Structure formats: structure tokens, C-alpha cells
Length: 489
Image (tube, rainbow, N blue to C red; front, side):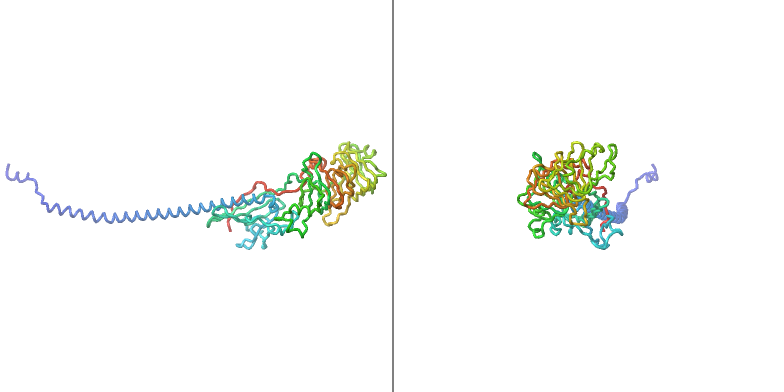
């Protein structure tokens, strides 16, 4: 091998200081690039973390607000349920047909107004509040009635609710309840519409009813032998606890037992097997006689006019033989007269065929031994007076019944008459039911009225279903017909 070839094949010898210099140069270049990258990544990480934290906080705030809003809505709904439950209690049910509609300070008008719509042009500029100033009812002064302490507002958990307004529409018989639920800063307002119905209270049919006044004295209203006394009740619409006894004989606007007795003039010798109510009951208008006077066996029901006064000396029995020949079988006999004055005579009523209805425009006077004898079921003989005269507090008629050895079985409905029993001495003196304008009996009279347990059904069977719900009426709400969430303003 030549010297030249040997020189070409030799491996180049690297100098260590050159290699180190090159490595140091590359390391400084990489370090200068990595530091900004690391700083940038850190800033990005911080930014992402900050953003996530802010978003988390926003989500928490939103979730908390949504939770509070849902909670306030739940409180409003719970308050609605509580309010309706309270209003449907017997002692508060009168509020369902009254109004509570204060001024909304945001608009200086009532919240609902007559049309039951929140904050529209219908609102009044004067607050309407008959809840805290109700009319007298139940025989006690309105001043003695107070709202339940938790009715207008109460708490549920950590929140509370408040009734903003309640408005009753008589034409549609619907109540609008506006209520607000509050949880912290969250406020929810809802309105519901509820039908308000009057329903007869169970076993409240009046065996004795007077619209104006009752002076019961020592008279009795009794059940029939073996009965329950379900209809042996007394109802007086306008009777009031005497003003001097309002404090001692009224409690929360309702009469005590002593107050009931004072209002109807009941004395210690009186027995009432049913209950006493100082209420405005449902009572249909008094029936009037048919306008047809041409009687025929095949014709429509007719009225037989007996003229001015009926006296037993000339007519001792109804129906008369002449009346039966032209009578349409299956319908009542309708007799119209002015006065019925029997003196000491007896008038016998025979209802083995058809019922007998007597319409008196004047007075009925039974004195001494004078009496009406009717052995049939009491609803088969009905005696009607004039229609009610609300413009005149003084009765225009007088029906004086007589007690004796034979009970008078009848239903008497005389809305414009004073009715009483003269010289009661029998048990019973009267069997059936008596409705009048006033019941006036002296304290020395011991008259007995016995009322069959099914007297309400017996009357309705003759006069129709309008008489089936007679008695004390109780307000009740039906299920809501509308629910809506409203703006709280």
C-alpha cells in the first residue's frame, strides 16, 4: 500500500473541544425556545382553570337561583293548598263568597278587580276587603269575627307565602286566588280559579223555619217516636244574639249554645231534638196556585176558588163531592181562599185519593176547639201563604193553629205570616213542618211539633227537586279549573 492510500484510509480524529462546543451551542438554543413555550402553556392553563372556575361559579349561582325559584314556586303551591283547606272549613267558608283585594303599590290599584285579571285596567283605586269586615252572620255581630291568624300569610320551611288577593264573581260563582311564594330573593306568583258551590249541610232541614224572628218560648220541636231527629231542626235567618250578650254568648263570630237560645227566645222548658241554626238557608219560593180555573177530569191541574172566607159551618170537608167529579186524578186539589176561620168547628181533609193544597191570601184562625183534622201523611196537606215581602218587616198574615186532642198533619209554608199555636195541649199538636216569617208563641204555650226524619223527602216528592236541598248551605270549592303562573309585580 502506498503512502497515499494509507493516508486516505485513516479515520479522521475528532477534537474533543470542538464536539463540546457544538453540544453547548445546541443546548442553549433549545433552552431559549422551551422557556417561552412553558410560560405560554402555564398562562393557558391558568386561563383555562380561571375560566372553568368562573363557569363553575356561574353554574352554581344559576343552579342556586333555579333552586330558589323552584322552591318559591313550591311554596306558592303549598300556600294555595293550605289556604283552600282553611277556607273550606265550616267556620271560614263564608269567606269564599267575599272579597280581599288590596291595592298593589306598583300600580296603586287593586290586584285583580272584578274581572279577576291581575294588574289590568279593571282594577279599582280603592281597596276592597270584606274578609276583615264581613257582614253579620250566624247571629253574631261582624265585629266578633276575626280572620285566622295564619290565613293571609304563613311560612313553609325557610320560605313564606302571602295571599295577594282573592276575588269572588257571583255571576259565575268562581273565586280567583292570587298567592305569592318567597324563598330568599326568589318570588313566584300563581293564580288559580276555583268554582264555589253551595251545598246543603247534612241533616239541616228545618222542621221550624222563620226568616225574620222566632220566639220559641217553651215550645218543642221533636223527632217522631223511634226517629233520629234528623229533621227536627230550627233555622232562623235574621235572628241575632242580643247586643248586650254579644261578648258572653259569641265566640269567634259564632253563637254559643246560650247565644242560640237567646236569639230564638228559647226558654228552659223547651226541647229541641235537632239543632238550632242562625243562618240564611236555601228555601225555594212559595208555590202559587195554577192559573187555570176551568177544571176537567182530562184537563190540566186547576184551581178551585173558595171565595172570601171558608167557615166549617158551611164547609166541613175537603175535597167536596162536587170537586171530585171534575178533578184530574193523580194531581193535587188546589183550593184558593182569602181567610180560613173555623171558630170552634172542625174541617176534615181527606187525602186518601190525592193531596190537598190550600192557598190562603188572608188569615187562618183556629181557636178553642176549632181544628183541621188530617190523618194522612203530612206532605199530603199543604197550606201556603203569600209570597215573601222583603220590603216590609211586619208580617201581613197571621196563621193561628190550635192544639188539641188530634194532631194536625201538614206542611205550612207562609213566608209573609206570623205563625203560632194557641193553647197547645197535645203531643204532638202538629206533625210535619212549619215555615213562616215569624214564629211567635207565648211562653205559657207548650206546643209540640214533631218532624218525621224523611220530611224533606216527602215534601220534595210533592213539590219537586227544588225542595230537596232545603236547609243550611255550606260553601265548598270544587277542583280548580285554571292554574297559571304570573309575573310578580
